[in-house]
Structure formats: C-alpha cells, structure tokens
Image 1 (tube, rainbow, N blue to C red):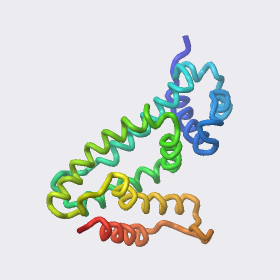
Image 2 (cartoon, rainbow, N blue to C red):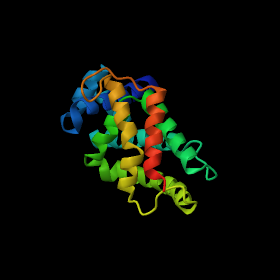
Image 3 (cartoon, helix red, strand yellow):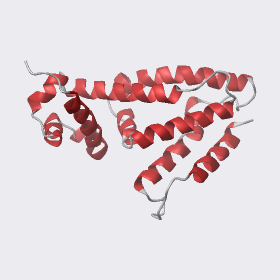
Length: 197
C-alpha cells in the first residue's frame, strides 16, 4: 500500500484551488488535477475517495482555516469599531497569504457545495460574529434592523472589491491600482459611517 506524502497532499490542495478559480467546478476533473500536479490519478485516490470527497475536504479545510483566522482576537469587550477593524485586518492577512481564496469561496458559494460545505461553515461564523454584532446593537454602536445580507454587503464587500483590484493590479477603469494602508483604512472609515447609528 502506498503511503501519504505531505508535500504532495499540499500540492494537490493548492492545484485544486488554482484550477477551480481558473476553470470553475464544471471544468474541474481528477485527470486535470493529476496532470497539473505531475502525479498519477491513482495517487489522488490515496488521499481522497472521489472528486466530491476531494472538493468537500479541501473546501471545508480552507473555510475552517478562514473561520479561525476571522475570529482570531475578537473579544466581547471590543467596541464595534475595534472588532470590525480586527475583522478587516484578519481578512487582509488571510487573502494576502491565500490569494485565490476569495475567488475559490465565490465558486463554492455558487456551486452544489454551497449546502454541503459553505453553509455549515458560515453558520459557525455567523453564530460567533452574530453575538459580537448583537452586543454592538445593544450598546447602540451599530444600526439595528439590518439583515445579514445588508450587513455583509456594507461591511465587507467594499474590502473584497479592493482586494480584487489589488490582486489584478488594476482599478475598474483599468488604471494601475495598489491597495495601500491609506486607501484601506479610509474605506473602512466610510464603511463605519454607514454602519453606525
């Protein structure tokens, strides 16, 4: 029986995410993955039972890591603004070290893995962040009566768009773009104005 190789396993995870970001779930196949990794298809089956098993495990692992980092340092004593600043800093840190993650998560959210991988992991995150947000509402630091979708759209979509511009190196008009600290925290300040009462 062949043994597992940690380096090969990491390569498989990395190439899986790269292929999904580049080609989407519909074009993804075990054969393409094996070729991209420079390994045999049989080697992949040492690590995973099937294509679905591979995608479920890699998606779950990546989202678990994301969840842990997003909640890192978040304390119930933080003010709303302090906690949100930490969320933004954690997101920047994660996406800088995992540049394909944002697109990978978008692909997962728009696929059949939404229910099996994305939704359960987001439930854990929402429970933790929900308690923080409720405290902010109770302390009158945040606007109440806001759906999760509205909150997410105001709180994080501007950041995610800046990250996308930074990764491509281009703004919406095709001009060169770099996400600087000044741009990042100026945007954060504008978001806070929208979320505070």
